[in-house]
Image (cartoon, rainbow, N blue to C red; front, side, top):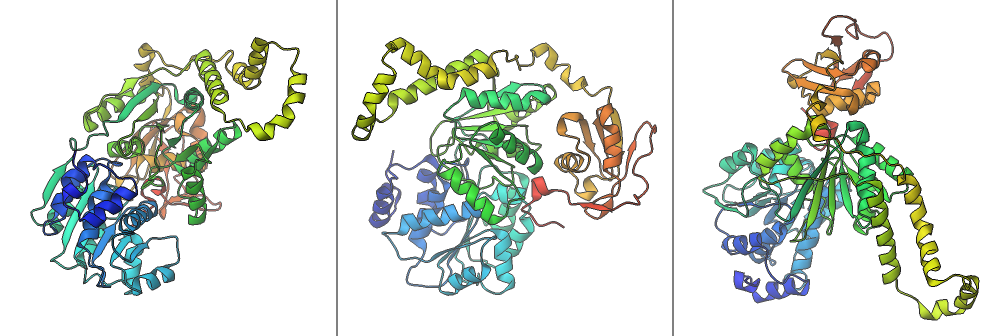
Length: 561
């Protein structure tokens, strides 16, 4: 394995990298850095999240940028504020003992006037989220005419978040002579289109197969009924006492609900979703990074760009509708060569999606069992004993208190003392799990899972793809307006101008009453039973009209058209 100087970096930069703990390059760094140091070719790098892409483009960028010129020479576009700030932090650390560069972060949720001042003082490198950069360009606060290098980091995520038009506008304002480097975990047709439109004969480098997952991630799944998913989640958390993990939910409502239930049940958890303002989001992320929060529950959009080391587990409360979202979710663990585990909680009717993901990302899932009560108790007891064994004793300060402690416990033998001490923590788990049922669904019943809603009602709704309606939007609307959760909903079929969905019979009245007077992106919602047995909200409600804006769980960071 080569060192960084052998890749062509100058001695000063190689030494600076080594001082902050980078010893040997990752595969993407080893292959990309020599190519990018030439500074004369467009480049496409395909590698999974957490493989060291920031250093792969950041180190060559620092070599190529002229510190004696105050002009903005390099632009890095990133999908989220968190990723943008992480890139700036990395670039500043790399260059601290190498060059005196002004690297400015441009992102939403912070003072735009302060960012404008920083840019006007001279910023050789700008790292920006697309939306805020568009705002800055509208104010003529950023000059892109001097740009020599553009880096599109996590290009697939930016497109998934609805930034295509922003990227087109930004790139159109940069010189045609610029060099473009595109980094992405996957290569969907939308990313390929950007490469075709804005790059000239790019060198394409793939580390691992295209669209494959990180080989260091162990992919697992459990099969449980929808109603048992939260109980299964708790067992998995209890079975892994040292977990430092991310839990993904489809909607912000589910995210908030799961986080609140976990906190109520005594878990060290918090939530991250689109309803949080920037100050709240920063506070949650700070607590998660310093591990004062052990479990973070998040939506796909809110979790974009999270770059936190040592996440041990990613748990999916449901399989995402887009297969690529699964790759991005699971990529939050096993970063920088570490190992990680991704666990999907699937209902019987969702097992087919596991096979689809296996084919798409070219990996194998292992079905595991939800741990039984005695297994959880044993794991917790052994974890407690390990803490006792490894605890650091402050001999000087505890010495004065020990005589009273010894006197209080003098009538207990060693074995009795151990048993009583262990029982203090162990008894609550034993009481909770004493009669815990088996949550696993038998293989035979898995095949019948899809028939669960065969006796339910089928509704027509006057919204479809033409209204930008997606399954996640419909599920969120039914939850918001009707208090009918996903576990009560069966098959959803999104058509062009209309859609169908199935619901348990006992929830049909809630659907009818809940959607009266509701609007979806300005359009009155109308639902009907397909059998025609009941009139629904086809007539506009005389009561107060409620406006519902769709797409928040999937496209919340994008620009709505």
